[in-house]
Length: 396
Ligand code: AMP
Picture 1: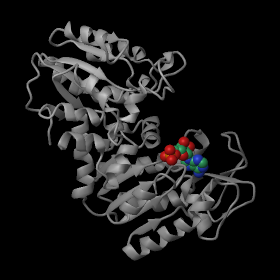
Picture 2 (picture 1 turned 30 degrees about the vertical axis):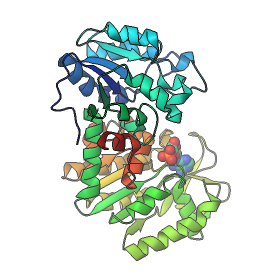
Picture 3 (picture 1 turned 90 degrees about the horizontal axis):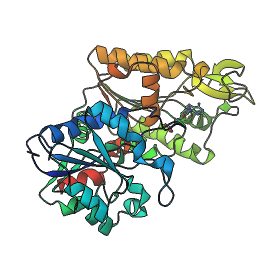
């Protein structure tokens, strides 16, 4: 792997693509700093060695051009406080003025450039825009795993302008290594837990996991489409009608491939989508009309926990219920606990995807799993066996 371990950065201008796409509240306060924290080792290594760190990132989804709420200026003071050094900010990411500011940087200094996505060329993967960015630096380091599955100008296209000076940052390297543990040498039994709202978006990963895992646990909103496929009554629970036949096919495919596909047996239901709703528990295939399944029930928790505790490799993407509401968080919390216990007993556990990560943090268990990925979509695509453009661009 082309990592930065052996590179000397002294005096070099280093363009570091990070993923500082962090959630901000209405006062522009960072509500989850994980992505910033994860990028620190790479930035520190570069400045400690006397490199000039020119940091580029996107933030949010600006429509066209500058939008105050998506300015990376909101990140500067926080970044400065955790790096324990001054961070300068430039209100553009390309152009003469930017080049001028970069030319005045001293060794070991940090400069954060404005949001790349204020230029539509970034997402379009525009070559000229990538070239302009590349002209700011001698070396390119990609540490943005969260966007490694996108062929954007700053994540993939830019690498061609650094044929002999392009590297993975420490975070990206760690992400790939963790995924490789799971893909190449998983200790058996290997269990995947897939939850979240919908099957759509996770079909490809489910299909590819069926070739790899011993157990595939399905929870969350998507489980109700499977329950309906099995002929059940699911009341007003989330359902993707057009995916019912696919759910049937997946059940059959799992049988053919000898994978233990575990669906929830029971469901905690609510009479409205609200934390204060009346609740009951029923078989997942026998939910009364008008009721909505919002969490897995005790029997499912027991079934799933048993499988998890016997597993030696575990991946988890997507919550088991609407964990954001305290009355429907129990299934997700218990499954998170089971994963942590299995990890304590020697299993390797990898958790990824915005919501499962948010859940595991909410329950204070983040340091009890083997690895938390900073990329949801990127992690799923890597597990599907796809080559990520951001990774490929460094390797090729
Ligand atoms: P995803 O982005 O597909 O991983 O979905 C995550 C979201 O799924 C979370 O916000 C959960 O609240 C939601 N979710 C989980 N279980 C259910 C359910 N039974 N009904 C509706 N939404 C759910």
